[in-house]
Structures are given as C-alpha cells and as structure tokens.
Amino acid sequence: MTITKDTVIGDILKIAPQAAPLFMGIGMHCLGCPASQGETVEEACMAHGVDVSELLSKVNALIGK
Figure 1 (tube, rainbow, N blue to C red):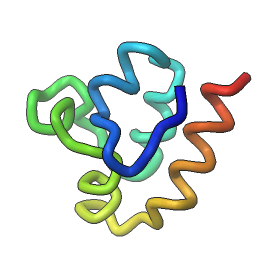
Figure 2 (cartoon, one colour):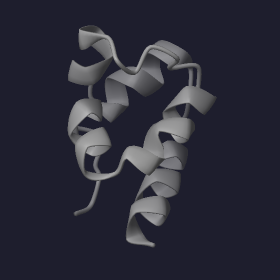
Figure 3 (cartoon, one colour):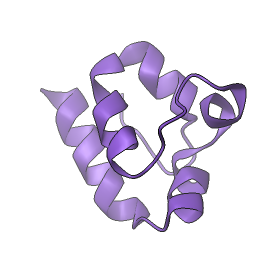
Figure 4 (tube, rainbow, N blue to C red):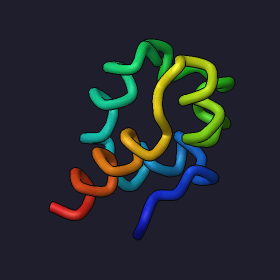
C-alpha cells in the first residue's frame, strides 16, 4: 500500500502501527482521539506545519520495510 496525502491517519495506523512515532514526532500526540484518526495526512501536516511530501516519504519508507 502506498500512503498518499489523502490517506486517513487511522487507516495508516491500522496497517502500520509502527508509524505512530512519525506522527507523534510532528506534534500529533493525540493519535487515539477521533479527530486525529479521521484526519488525512495532508490535514495533519497543515495543522502541524509539516511538509506533506517529507512526511509521506518517511511513512512510505517505513511501511515498505
């Protein structure tokens, strides 16, 4: 599976829980709350001032392992 800017955070964590530290690293400390679970990668990056392309690269590299 390739993660895109439109992929929902909750879906990523279901298939790759090991990605949680990447999201926590951008300031997304409430991964269990419903709001963060329903956000897309792009929405999370906008809310936390992170470059979406950079985070996507990291998440996809981690999941590809």
